[in-house]
Length: 568
Image (cartoon, rainbow, N blue to C red; front, side, top):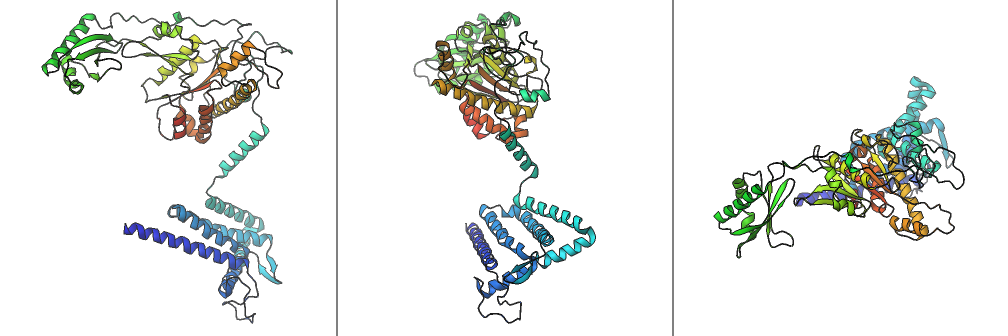
């Protein structure tokens, strides 16, 4: 405790001393007068100095002006910079950089000032603008490098000193300037006609970039490439018009069948396991009865109702003994089952049943739901179909190591949406930095743009999505509705009054990023900002995100991204 206290006191003393010295030097230099008496000169001078800090200040300012000229005004600011670093607690890490930048910057600027203007007049006295240091340094460098070489060398040294003291990158500065000028010159992309037809106005997010780098697409060219006339429907890329080019939803018969009869658990095996459970628990003094068996594709749930007076904790503690008796890898006890007066005992099946996508797509639960963004995920332990609605999530994060099923999950979601949604109602933006997972969807009519595999181009996709979100909010506000569902209903029931905005039915847009970490490594700051804006605001505009990553670390899934994507 005493060591910490002493360390803190030393730090405070250093801050006070450095700040005082910086202010003292600044005052002495501001009030410098060449005729003031000082301890370095024996000439007859006025008795009382005009310097604000007396004869000591006059002496210090005279010495600094003689040594480095007007560059001495930078010294107090260097001391204040050191004080600031000490306050922040970073001086120990940056001390060497600050000292080196000081030793480079002061001579370089002194030399440059001496080249531009060797002398200047203060109170009718001629002084060296760069001091003796600048004069001698110039004389030495000119002897070896001549005037042009000296100027070039001093400029480079000054630039290095500025980079060190400012701790910033020239490339980053030029990139920021380029982005600023680009945003200033280029307005948000407007919706334009494209090669293929749809019934609403959308534009390819990378129409301009696509001219520079074309992507191969298996989509057939539209037969309706006539020039648009007043009153014609303006259309967007990648989708078909249901009026001009009929589109029918794909049939589940396209999917493969997987016979499962030989892998389903038999009634005899279920009865045998139920009997073993009752007998084994009775051996430990736990009496009860198996009341129901719920077979699932991977595990089978046995509902066990204990006798009166039996504590649930006794059954939970016997899980390992039950696994040994049943010769199972593990046994999971769910105690108690929700809304039931029973305990659930889950036992893995010896032969795992394959859950086919065709079976899920053809299930009544999926076909009867009216939510356009509903999709299937699989079956639960009870063998029931698991459905989810992307519109209610409203964004989804899928994370896991290689081989844990991320790609299977994404493909299942995509297939569910494609079997369910017409291209007029759903648009897709697929970003696949790995180049192998989503390429099979190239050319489908739901795509707003060919599958994006370039990481830098993916940033443009997200930027376009933010612009499209803002455009949609303007349309919603113009009709006085709160979300995309009410907007499309309002357009279907009435014609908007005279407005400067052009109203068209809006489809849902689902943006899928297969590997977020690849984007974050290239442009983490910009990608994070764009994803956060979409996650916070895009739900009402009908834009939804599905993000997948192998490593959900804090540098990939930042705190703000995690907070705005609750479904995982």
